[in-house]
Amino acid sequence: MAYFPLHGVLPPVITPFTAAGDIDFAAFGANIRQWNDHDLAGYLVLGSNGETPYIDPADKIKLVGLAAQHAAPGRIIMAGTGLESTNATLELTRAAADAGAGCALILTPNYYGDQMGDEAQMAYFFEIADNSPIPILIYNVTKFTHVNISPKAVAALSHHPNIIGMKDSSGNIANLIGYMIAGLDDEFNLIVGTASAWYPALCIGVKGSIMALANCCPAECIEVQRLFEAGEYDKSLELYKRVFPVNACVTGKLGVPALKHACDLLGYRGGYAKRPLLPLNGAQQKEVEGILKKAGLI
Image (tube, rainbow, N blue to C red; front, side, top):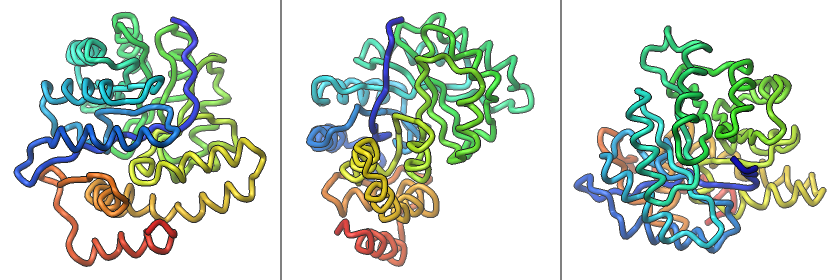
């Protein structure tokens, strides 16, 4: 597999739903076209912030195809195709590749957590990589899986030619450093998975991010990196601190419904959250609005 460098910001794109719980495909395509106005590296379709566990397989593939259709030239289309079984993951990955995905983000298997140690994780990812038609990345999101793939396992996996990186959404900088010093392949892309760790991650040499905040604040997320790489560290840190409370609200405290409300307020089409996720109440909506105002975004 040729070198596949990942540099810059990718939003794990939201999936707009109607009040009845159906995907609003027109709104999804409109969001992609609007994000094209920003210098994003690409789009992650079917990530956690896309409410992927609630989406039927056929609709998943349709979303990947729409992203590929509407994305600006040169944008990476990454698809979250990790499921619990090896066969199901490979089936979805192949279908996503056929629909236009250029790489796949594969969640660590986690349902039988006690049996998902290094040996099982490595065997799983090696088998997926051996049989995937597109490059894959590991998705480490301990918040949901309660599994933290070890630095030793990631270092071994990093040398497989079809495993090109990892999205670490732990939000733990010590965790990131642990991976960095474990002996990763020089061409392996270690990507931060939350805006809460964006500036610190840049400081330790991370070059790419996939973060929910980029759905509603793509310009600010991109600018933090641009300023940092231009050597304007104080300005980069100042902007990071300004948008940090927004991220804490829409990815931590109130979650996807708050992210969608922020997108609505900032000109995107957030739509409804999918049940069983509940909509924000009036007080929560005002909280999101207040945080956006304080950050100077509205």
